[in-house]
Length: 197
Ligand code: ZN
Image (cartoon, rainbow, N blue to C red; front, side):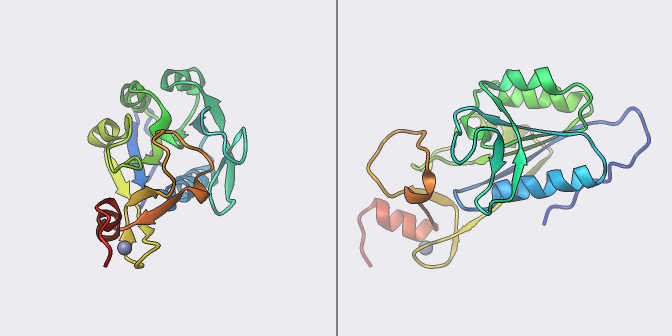
């Protein structure tokens, strides 16, 4: 489990940093984001959460994780819009960050440079197993990267692929519960090569 740095430092010259939580579908990355944000709230820190407007599953204004543990969020159309809201914030959370644009790493670094803690959750790979959008560059520049795993639906091993179970080639596909299954490397490779064991 990720343990937070102590933020009870009275110094006014505090420095910010970036945490990234990545994983496949059903890996619990949003739950982990919410866990960290809730703990910051308990510490009476000012917290704001953002998510791309494209992610309209379940609810317009809430980050809703699969276990219904929700937190209010601000929808943004691009990464730079987050900068309009950071004044006075201690912690900035961003969910479903893979859908944001390539400005995301620069935006997060700018926010962290203002002394703000930035926590970003997103898919590390798309359904084809390719690095997803701005996430790889963000992982490279963050202080802390946590990779969480789902459970393979075919063999019960640790899964890190989000296998799409329908034939669509669209990168952004919502309502994911019906259309994806988390798979481990062995099962994903078997599916991709049509190998039946
Ligand atoms: Zn498996």
